[in-house]
Image (cartoon, rainbow, N blue to C red):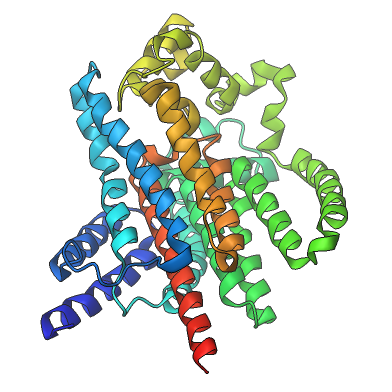
Length: 423
């Protein structure tokens, strides 16, 4: 590595750390950091210098997820040929360009300066520091109520449910609730793997990071956190005991979880018997079944090849109008389900490529990183049920950063194994 590559490579790594540090915060600065990171990666010459390939020998299976995501990305790009609104297609492709760039980044490797443990510590510390900062920002909003929706102050009783509503609504103003919780959960996964030999730090960080989930009132993130805890518990058990203990953990967890979730104000919104009250308190948009039902009204419109990338917004708008759902008029016509959005835009073929790519992350991961792959995949797979994760820039960046962490952890463990064998 010459002096030019040394300087650029080292600078690139520090910019990557900046991207990781900005993940939990509002995305205005994250865009610029990501642009600088990718530009430096290109300047280093990774397009031509392929000497640092991430997976070698028997671990070439790691190529498969990238190739499948690449095929899905190409299908999404080609869908512009039959998309009616090319402007929406171009807009979406700009957001999805990270998929096109992260594939060669993952395949051709990151330079030798990339340290998984240091990046992990930056992620965990930034996630922890984000919690008091968001609380501070929301406190400012509380004292400047003119910037907020006045409807939420109607009938304010200063009780627990009102405060949960206030916090959850305004965390969306600062950064989308789902993505904040997803990054916090990603930080918890990293802390779990990073501090395996320091239990005090390990459980301390995890407890702090998970505390933001109930505060943000994200129902899906509560369920996702429970699933991650079950996966971690199963991996901690001996293989011969996993079935029996795993069944016990699931039963006890389901019983406790059901009781706790019924007490959560946001979970009470699933009570469809009181639809009039839901409309009065402005919660109609939280009824995901209505949204998904609208998108599934005429599946023959998009079943095989889809309508083209970026077309789901207009399609959902037409379905809302057809079903006379006036509440959504003038608002974002989001599918609130990544799988439904992929089906509408890319059809069954595109959805199959998308699902195969996610399955391959776990199936192709080496044993040393299988647990991380399971937890990382579960984080996204569950959140994609209630949100179009990749319709947001920060959702795409989180995916890209997560894959880099998975590759870096695999490389670190491979190098450590090689060193042990040499000794």
